[in-house]
Length: 477
Image (cartoon, rainbow, N blue to C red; front, side):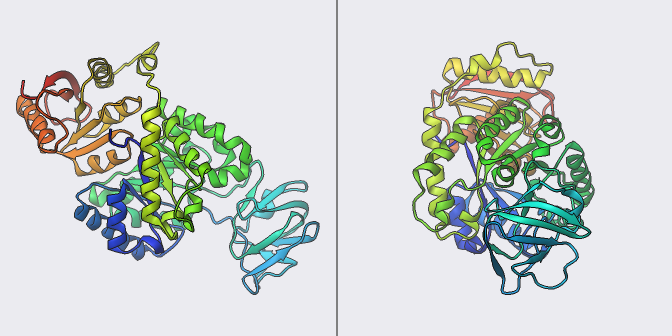
């Protein structure tokens, strides 16, 4: 049994050499994340090129996800780089401050904050480690009392408990970064802090325009990290190709205790709506400095896999950690073990479900047939990758092979759970295409003589959305 759950790894100082990156890909990375919160445009262009080259050397297809920074809702800088806040002391967040901050006040990158808060509001700094209660707002100054103190250093993030900050999801920097990401044709574009479907629609429009010179359209991932996004999750999903359960900022806004149930709900909704879903933040956090994960981290990754997530993501673990390759190896092993234990509910998935499209019905028929006949593989001849995506929304211990003539579709499919994307030339004759597909999988060692497999395709061949045929075959028979 090969691993169905995909691994997303973030590039950073610890993983930005060709040698380390190639080892990470061999260890199990399927998607590489470029974090646009750090570095200049040329840095990302160079890293994208390095990813393509390392993947080619490793003999594996890897997608690139460009992750936009989003609005900088942060404090400014301190004299000395940091200060210490005591419980109960007054502290001022000053949008008009131009000098370095002190123990009494600090400036703000987000100048609109005084208009977004009122007395009694709770502000959480540095991922909730520092808690401030708003006493009053005077002009550009927010006067607070420290509820939970500690060390506060330069540029730490600010969240408002319960949400309600008006910062737009797409900043001027993000718009420039979209152009950079399209210049190297990233397969996935992750949008930070979207509040509604309109934010995602705007990002898609900007990406499609920026990608036009290369005739490139990326898939969009909405990072769910604002409390305002939760009530409109369905609309955001409809406007996106997938979501990221971004548990860091989300936990600060809605409370840590609410996140596990939200994670399960988001994964379930995404799968039901034929969208992909990535589970992220602190999955293997201790491995930034330790060579093995904690038992709690092992359970966290396993539970996300059992929930049905398409991918699990590593952030600082691979960007700045001491053990990037070991972290990926541990994550891959945990995912594989969890998949062995998962319950299959394929028959129940199809009860009371209606498929209005021929291609979707064929995809579901292939799953049902392969499951009950004990097929060794499901093969989808697909131009866009949609057939493979629909199949991957249901748990089945039969590998799905997405065979496409489009390199972009091949790389996009690297994120789909239980899908192995393979590049295959287009054939106009159906029988030739089916024979070549079988030959390809036999030569790759995926099928052997006597194996039964289900294969889907469309007639006429080579048109997206045209899947209309299901055939059950036996290798060599």
